[in-house]
Amino acid sequence: MTTPTAVEAIDLVKRFGETTAVDGVSFTVPEGTVLGLLGPNGAGKTTTVRMLTTLSVPTSGSARVAGYDVVANPEEVRHSMGLTGQAATVDELLTARENLWLIGRLAGLPKELIKPASDDLLDRFSLTDAAHRIVKTYSGGMRRRLDLAVSLIAAPPVLFLDEPTTGLDPRSRNDLWEVLRGLVADGTTLVLTTQYLEEADQLCDDIVVVDKGKVIAHGTPTQLKDQAGRASVVLTIADFADLSRAEELVRSVMPEVYAEPGARRLTAPAEGLSDMTRIGTIIAEAGIGVDDLGLQRPSLDDVFLHLTGHRAEEGSSEESDGASGSSVGSGDSGGTRRSGRSGPSGGSGTETEFEGAIR
Ligand SMILES: Nc1ncnc2c1ncn2[C@@H]1O[C@H](COP(=O)(O)OP(=O)(O)OP(=O)(O)O)[C@@H](O)[C@H]1O
Ligand SMILES: [Mg+2]
Picture 1 (cartoon, helix red, strand yellow):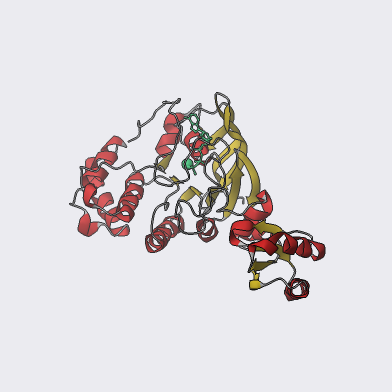
Picture 2 (picture 1 turned 60 degrees about the vertical axis):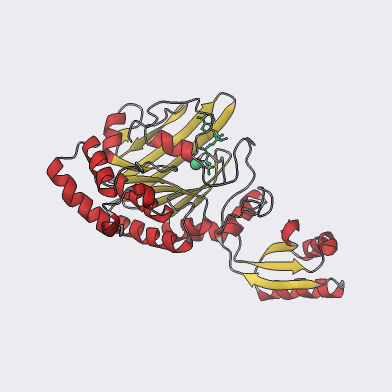
């Protein structure tokens, strides 16, 4: 009675020279569910997706998609899946309809099926009115929707999405989530990567948190939140000069404390109101000025903090790239990648297998 497995990764490893981009990643995705690979820049998300989608050969380990081995049966794997890559893949000089036609033909779809399939996708992604405009004139959100539509033309049972909503405004992001929920309701299995904790929370049945190529946590959104404690007391100090003294005081009454100097903020996983009162009292008695004190339900952001010891946005220098939303933009181990979210992934191009072959 167990649900069949749609995607299985077993101890996947990928090395590029000295760099180990993916370092023993394993997970299983039951059919009709959504798995999120959550992690900061350079965590190895794209590299994992590339191995699962046959664009890159694992250094070691194995993986199966729809029952087919990605190394032994790449052709079958490709027929069972769709991929929306991190960088846009649609042709800017063609219209939406032409892009769908082109990819439909490349996927070997009979001509008479492409028109109705295109109509359906254009409708589903609210692109019908723009269907005859060249993509160059589209907004970022429209392009992203078309990217997705194109990867769905052959109605794959398994869909891989590499950061599907990065760069989208909150409204477009919400719209896209709705579309993705619709796909899942129709039985599609999704594997998506994201830096957005909220996105993982909203969409995923299961989340694999990766950092530096390794799985650092795995569970449902609720399980991960439970790991981080039931709630946190968050204290914002008025004067930066008092921060380390405040941190010591809080540490004397709480088992765990995290400091974010830039925000003059201390966070302590807590049981409830009594912890907040305790912290408030000890800080007030020390004569330390407070901007804000509150009790917060754990978010996935707190989970990340709990797991890695740093808050998600930290690491790329404070608010330097103006990124919006709650993103995992932690420091990158390699130091070669930018924190901006607009460029394509993939690094120096030491690997070219199949690059662009499925476009
Ligand atoms: N073709 C390549 N050649 C050499 N190194 C690479 C290559 N592709 C990726 N890497 C390195 O592997 C690591 C993981 O990269 P990957 O693109 O998988 O991360 P990511 O989690 O997708 O990050 P992002 O959120 O920025 O897209 C990085 O250190 C990256 O520089
Ligand atoms: Mg990536």
